[in-house]
Image 1 (cartoon, rainbow, N blue to C red):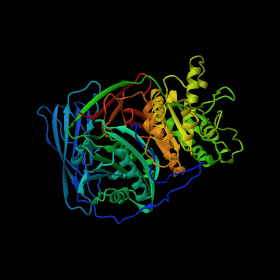
Image 2: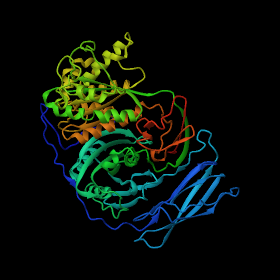
Image 3: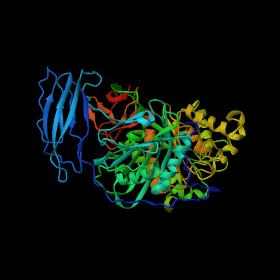
Image 4: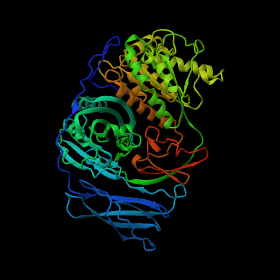
Length: 640
């Protein structure tokens, strides 16, 4: 999104690194719990090749859902099939497909106290011819929600309840919950007369004001399968008392959409802290937009063993959003493991005195950074450099060093190196960001200077210690509390022949410089004045926006926001460095992965995840990670 903007309207900071405008951290109000909706069955259709085991489920939506006491009946099957109903009284069952054609099951579901009688559910299985690429992958179809006023549609994971809709004042609202995972979602269709960038900034500012939220990582841009521009941002907020994710969502929806969400399916676990994700999408209909919102319990989002973060990302990455004319198809893709994922990550750190607190916060992320980068299977190195950018770069004296992700003392070295003063007053800390000539407040210029020196050396010096490795993902984190005019006036404007005669042209040229090198760009930065881009005062944020990266707003970032923001940056790097790139545009919630014949669970702890930016599969943990030469077979639904 070349004209995109990263900053929020609220919480601006100004002048010489001094912080101003820190938001008061309010809380989500704790409304009384309303009665849940009557018990119903959600639709389920599974597609599976002959010989595969299809996972069946009675998708009961009720106040409480028992796990036993169900009765399965096979109502209809292909003529040549000899199959019978699953012999279980459980809510879920496995069924082996033995013929091409359609099977229909009826499931009589018991209801807990408060819901009377039995509920009858239908489950369908479509038996398919065997695909040699994916002979065993069985996929439940996503549920499709029609977004009529925007001319779009949204595919949701079967874990979400059937979406309920409301319309008021030219706005439409569709809400659902993944009850057992405590994730609440909403899709809002609304007029967008001001353009997508201005609308996104307005909505994000309203979100922060409504629930007292603080930004985590904002402004990540992308596109839907139809080419609609998306802007995705994440926030966190706390409630005065424990409550449910759907309560927090409904409070926000009343403020954002002025529409009453209606009754909810509820939740299972209370929390006082929540993660909000907001994606604003330019709809194909002129003057319309779709806003995708998820709210999840923060402890569940932070726990890699829980599916909450995956469920929220599958909505807000917008892979399930498409024009209404499309139907879903099933695709299978076979890949082979040939290499390790690699990344070299530069942190460009302002070492002026006003940055001591921010350097400490970065240092306190080191343990999490190393843990999550390694969990994603990335062979990585991180280098910390002073954000100076007006003179020549000398990498030999005192001697630049990458910190290896495999180093046992890597987290400590990173914490010591990223802080100009001693980290936590540790007497053993004798490290600091690698020094550059000139002042210390130009992170974008410093990245360009260091990178070009490393590229120059790569032509004659085969030592990887002073250069980027070949065929590796590059990333940069800009860290300063100063205006972007420092970067522009002190370096880029000094060579207008190369970078352009105006700040606007220079921002575009610098963003293209990063794109041409497949550089991911992120920032822990302040923003000043009007948050929209291009803007010389916001040179760094605008370069990041034009290159599709994300920003941790420095003026509101405390330890929790910086740590969570770095974790999301790691997600982007893991997706970019993966070799398992899909040729199509999958609906992420439908993905099924096998390594050779072994089915891999969708998990951020031990399993696979998905990155929409590069359409790639990321393996986390070591249990299922493919070895060299192993096959990776991926099946998924996609928008035809």
